[in-house]
Length: 182
Image (cartoon, rainbow, N blue to C red; front, side, top):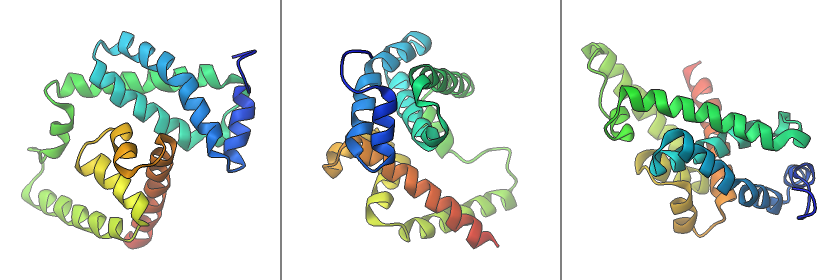
């Protein structure tokens, strides 16, 4: 946004060099326009809020590979794709999306359910090996279904810290999972 402070590219560079305020300012800059865009697409404030959080997580995961000069358009593209995913999920599970994923898949055979329970137990064990900040953000998001703003408030940390802990925790879990499966 010309004339209103640092450019997106400057803020991305700040974040990449370890200055968390860069990410805070980017979130502040794009939170409202992205949310309005998502509400327009999804026609559901709660679903739009969840999709906005997923958009920011995906953006955080891929920020290093983005041309910061075109960040705005890229963020709206990510938001659009996340909204389309949310619509598909909502179509298959219109009542309480989160509850859909908590129910065992009725198609699974009993041995498939046993494997899923075993995987869930292994995942909980691996989760315990994460640093407490990452573990707590993942626990509150995945197991309690809290929004990132609620998690940040509960943990008394900035929103970008909660998002970064989720991102880093999931990356670490992925590595631990792959190592554990070998």
